[in-house]
Length: 118
Image 1 (cartoon, rainbow, N blue to C red):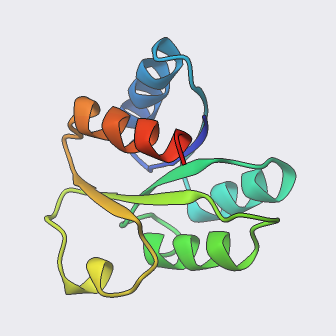
Image 2 (cartoon, rainbow, N blue to C red):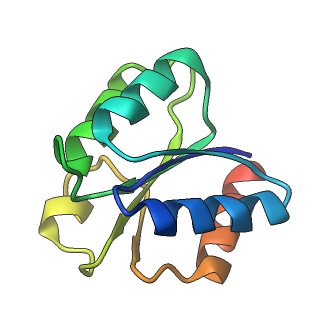
């Protein structure tokens, strides 16, 4: 899978990218919502891991725009946050999954594997 990582914690995003590549995925890191949307405009992603608290605008807005501007099938959207899933994310219909930081990489890999098998 081709995965977009959107997280303002650059070290965490870079480490996640390395782990995904080790699992035979391709991955691209962005550190702001604007960078994520620019990346999505130039490249198709199968999945996006979106931090909910970004420096320029909320991760929910990134997710909304990724869904609205998708060419073809929108990417699988996974919210990543230091907080547990709550009404602000689970009730919006924007995200397919929510993972709390620190991310359980085995859970993420199960999510990506199921999505790849659709």
